[in-house]
Image 1 (spheres, rainbow, N blue to C red):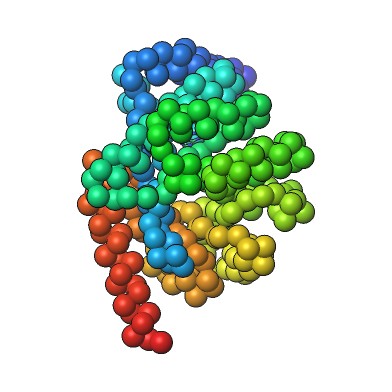
Image 2 (image 1 turned 60 degrees about the vertical axis):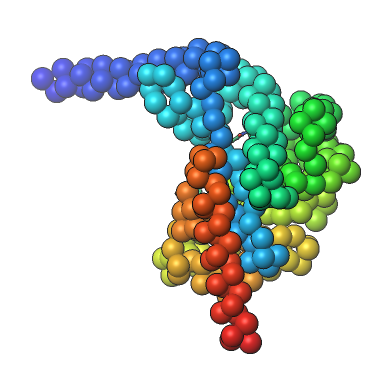
Length: 291
Ligand code: C2E
Ligand code: MG
Ligand code: MG
Ligand code: MG
């Protein structure tokens, strides 16, 4: 009897594994045609900079699968990497982001800074800065409007080469942010050697802030360290007023998260940008009154 139960467990376990692989295979297959079938779109999430008193955006890729609905980038980006599809998808993301920056300009939001995520494959493709300047040239957008977000792990695969690539991008006036900062502390001893402009403290650290835990000291230290190195600090995944207060008190420059706005489709940008602007103005008014 017990043995039979065991067998059932094994069968159940195997069928779960089977489901996971089947889904992965399906995504892998359908991803091949997703670009030509126009299934991708970009959502945008505002970043609020309390220091420079400005609002910028991060482009976040969305895939609307005809049967499965919205598939999370956390799920399909790794597959796009493995299959090299990320190179073409990445180009599409940059073009689309350029287009939308231009559209925003025409709608009365000039010089909105736009951050685009880059995956490891794109970063190490060899001709990244050529690809990037070709797209900007073709689209007629100003490179200084753009920031590239690169994760620590990507950069740490080959730090020496990364430094070279980053320098070339910087010559084009593109700024660089380290995404998910703090997740792999391996980059700490390289931080001052990378020609970067900003770090984005990973959401996991911000989440810990609300629990009154040791997490607060870690975040404080990250902000101090980044400022010592003349880097802008962005906190990602800010969800509560308590977190905002703490981060402001510790001098965090920029914040992003559901507290301010979720990632939204292009159509909702004008009203959201105005709302963010009003909020920043209110903050500045209060600051003036207090000092
Ligand atoms: P990321 O660049 O670190 O983006 C932050 C993720 O956290 C986004 O998930 C965003 O929707 C989510 N988020 C933002 N604020 C909050 C919050 O307050 N609370 C919570 N719980 N979550 C929040 P998303 O859009 O699912 O993207 C996941 C990851 O996929 C991104 O992480 C990025 O690494 C990658 N990704 C997204 N778009 C692209 C792209 O165009 N190219 C590449 N290579 N990777 C991308
Ligand atoms: Mg990012
Ligand atoms: Mg991030
Ligand atoms: Mg993150």
